[in-house]
Image 1 (cartoon, rainbow, N blue to C red):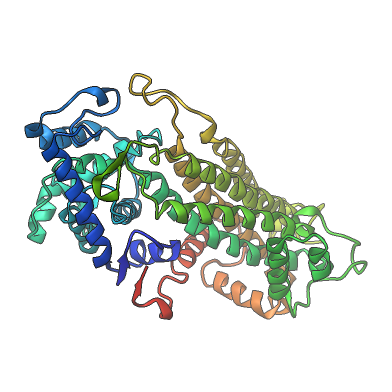
Image 2 (image 1 turned 30 degrees about the vertical axis):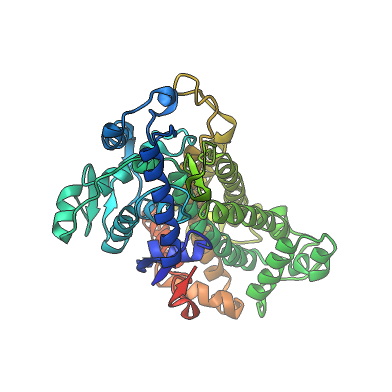
Length: 509
């Protein structure tokens, strides 16, 4: 079990909860702060003090005072009216991650909600009740209002949820589990929907696969180097120490490890003096992507542990401040950066695929790796498919964060578009997986032609894994099936990596 405290939640632990389906618990000390914060809200109501979202309207209606007898209706109206998401639902795992992240934020004790709300969120995660949340409709400031409203609907027994793989009314799911849904009181609806949890959840899950794809791209590139009889001198540690980027040097170290013991790679001057950039500059280009990943990881883990609703309650209720922590600009920038960094992994991969199939560039391999060049096209159109995807990525990589549009009658006049950035980042990550699958397929074929017995021991193991999924090209066939098989292999390897480290079996954050 992972105990949430409002602080210290890591991407690794989020992966264990969301993908590994590990249970969560609520820190008792943090719940004391939650109770104190709730007591402050009750005192504000009792004293008749005016506080945004507790006894006022929302957005442009913030100057409208709400009578105390209507505060519960105010919260219910808020959730129902804001649940206007559009388009296809987020994947169920994104919805699950949203619940975890909202729970963690509320545990910080600045939101003024009752403990029962957190307990029901915990029940949602542990019982596998995931709200059906449309993926479009958030501007990424004032929080992810529409997506989080759909999460809140599931909590109060309205809207739809997924349980055991079946979509059903939320009330029915709670009835199946024998637990009553929550009835919201003052401020609780606002506390549930003011936050960046949609963009952060979507971005975090995209990041987790992106990080694994960056590792997978290295052994795939290693197979390409073997197939092209690449020069290993470019990975010499002195070259990378001379520049000084630790990420670049780390990629070079791993490339040397992958290629150690190969009988196919060459040294400077044996076949050629130097390789093309897509081979020679792997540490520089992949290393730069690792720099991006480091930045994105840092920002995501800060945001995962942030109080992002409004207003925030401090000093046992003496200080209630309307601020802007719900603004998603930091996450928007991070997601746009992730889009660019991952797009480059695909760009350079496609260039390596071109070298594998182009008879003018592939060091004597058959044209397009065809078993009968001319009569059979071989892998010719696989490069076309990869080229199409990298071009699509270039469009998706346009920064969403440079856009803004006013809302709520210009009260909310600058927004982040962070959720759009996160959604596009997730799409790009999926596209990168497909491009790497094409390179892996072509490199597998080429290494088989060169002689797989000459591969380095480490890459021979990878070649054997691929050979269990895809046969060599002996005759033209429907290659999309092969690419899908490789893509699934990469996807499953990424999902299953380090979900349950032994030393983290029972961990309080």
